[in-house]
Length: 132
Image 1 (tube, rainbow, N blue to C red):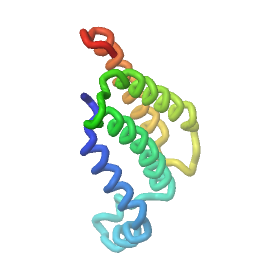
Image 2 (tube, one colour):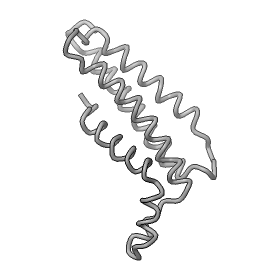
Image 3 (cartoon, helix red, strand yellow):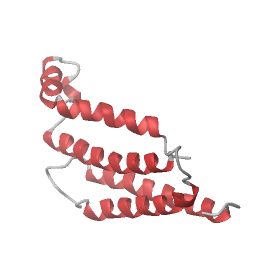
Image 4 (cartoon, rainbow, N blue to C red):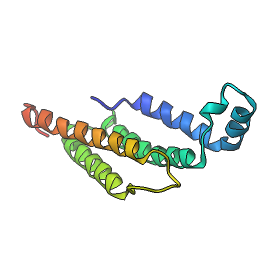
């Protein structure tokens, strides 16, 4: 399927590491002239925290669908629907403007693209010869 558990897990790990060592990352980047232009502002860090919470939702859904000790085919549709509802709520909760969060329009675009992709899967489910 489109959700790649290892990619999501790896992204969350790296982002989590960066968040835990936020001060060290800032300090290192401030000392290196070439990296200074990539320094993260407080609003950037807030956006990263938000995306980390979103990734957790995708990880949880992927984990549920990837279970190997029990059948998951019958729950896949419900998991996708729940994930789509979660993404819809994330979009609702995302403010149109907040000076504490960086690049809200791009965050909104990403969530909208994720919602559309999940909608595409509903068509696939409908055409599936298997009971879902």
